[in-house]
Image (cartoon, rainbow, N blue to C red; front, side, top):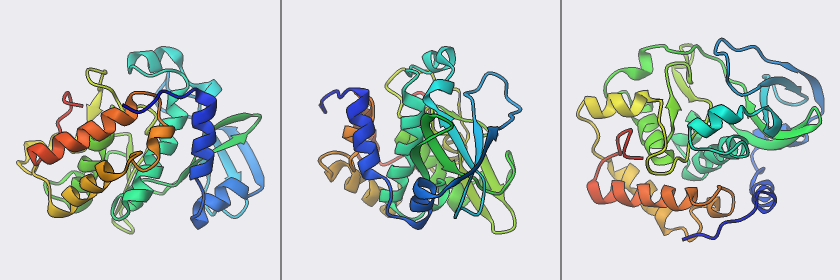
Length: 254
């Protein structure tokens, strides 16, 4: 098992792991142009702020530690400290796994804005709930299902993805409630459910290769020093279970 580290050490490890791509570097170093509350149609979610960053061509979205709704976090088996860390960790995992996952998940870094540290995600174009990526066997939807099963995404409802029809691109958003432990509450996992219901749960050769690379890493791509214990152990165990079974895990098996 990976050792449990205090939040401060995990933040230091996260800061050391981020950067190195043009988008991340701009989000980390660009001058703040504006910072304002971002409205949401879903009451009770964690506080989100829209941020304009010099050098970043689209608005970014900042979720501070202080804005986490403790009651909702508790419902998902998370602490108020985990959502911003999880948001950044999902991007780090997608970035390390590479294509197609690094195209599905928007870049995300930990940065202090408005006097508080939090996750800063790159904004993307698209609309929620579009059925196009939900079609059985659609490649981006298949990849989304593998990724959500691997990270034990607890809240992938129809509002937590965006589809950009202009470029036929799927983006996955809101990873604060992910990296679940066994028996943690899961609200929805639409891509996992559709892939399994369509009889397409079996792993592809490329997916098996990605999972083998993850478990071959002694620190699961550095996430052992970033995620709250025992979430990195659970991540590695899910990868092992999927390899052994030859298929993605269903919601409820996370």
